Image (cartoon, rainbow, N blue to C red; front, side):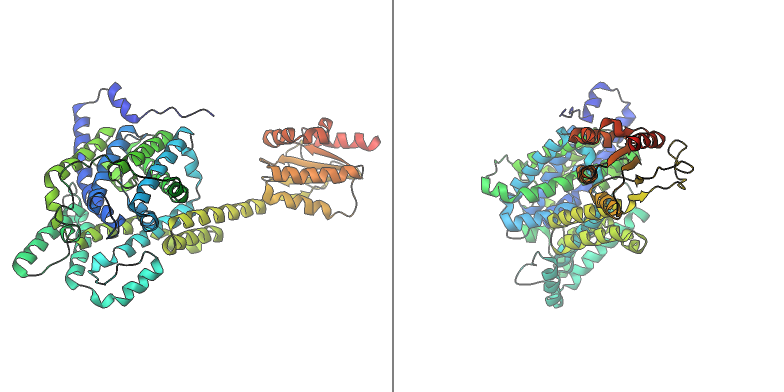
Length: 568
């Protein structure tokens, strides 16, 4: 197999001369996206690591470090000129699942394994295969993830108090919320709702260059400080939750993670889920970026870059990362046109960490929850739920099943079941479209050389036409139709000029029919077969079994061959 040639799009910067205006646009876009990424990175770090889990740095810092390192590497090495990488909300359910089962050390190892899987996928040229994951599966787990994210933010959004933390399982969490609903804090709810309102309304009435999440974070932080200092009212902040040094004002240290073969075996499925989710989201983001920028990304190079980022981040206390649609769209919308803007975005986040890290401890927790709630609302495919009644029943079933499994269980189970269910329903749909029918002298559904109308079909000759892909879902149809005939014909003509594809199960069904007919002294003639089915029959030895003379280019030739056989 020929490996993919790794050519990062950033190499173009070294060979192209660009006007100063384009460079300034990239810098401006990078600064803007860096400000957009700041509250998201903080919120995603907080949401990804439950309280009490031992980590090398506080949870908010993990999100920021991931945005800096992964954002830099994905822009520098990626196959898209404008892709912005970092932690995303889609990873939250699977990250929580891994941490609960294997601790933070398990998450680090799973992320590294996912990085290796992505690199292998990229070099093996599997980037295009991601596009073949059925849309109902991606839409279902995207909406399911959005619901799961919102459920994880209820406690911080409402100030709900309990002796024990919220359980991870969705149904148990709903029961836990109901049992403690009387402990909600009105001030915390006011901060949460107010922050959501600012994030939602700011783009419509404010200065669009400044992200609404930054405005909400700044206003909420100032208000929380004033209320605490002069009003005696307190709301939970990053500092009260994670300590005054929630974000260290220095770069993370390089640490070699610990791992074992047993843990690797346990993490194969979660790591694969991270890799698939990363591939889907990053390539979907790259496609969106192509539409906005008029460029065309290299999907395999992009997968390799995602893999390098996920392989590197764990050495510095990072989380899984991928291409982020919202940040990438903001990058293009603000004039970004090269990987430079993504690099600048990472540098801006680094400067914020080095200079303003101490101020992060004053940010209210309900504001961080509001940031993620708004992300979840925007990422959910809610409009598809309204169209369930207009979809084919099979697509609606796959979408709902994947969504519910994502919410109630986890993403790994949802993707596995969703893919299997989608595949089974696809097989059924294909088999239903394939027809095996008898051809008579009144048939008019063919081209001149294939038409049966007015052409005499000799006595003792039976003609059947297979219409559509001849795959294992439809192979049984041919056997059922032929078995319906009480007597064996002297010659059976199978017209296959309308068969575009054939698989080994169909070949096996054809072989059993040929063997049964040949035992009774009958001959099978294949008419109008295409290249792919012919190649399959050649590899399996069926051409020799049927006889090369019994393969005819069209129906007229097949009738002549049948008449010749009848005379022998």
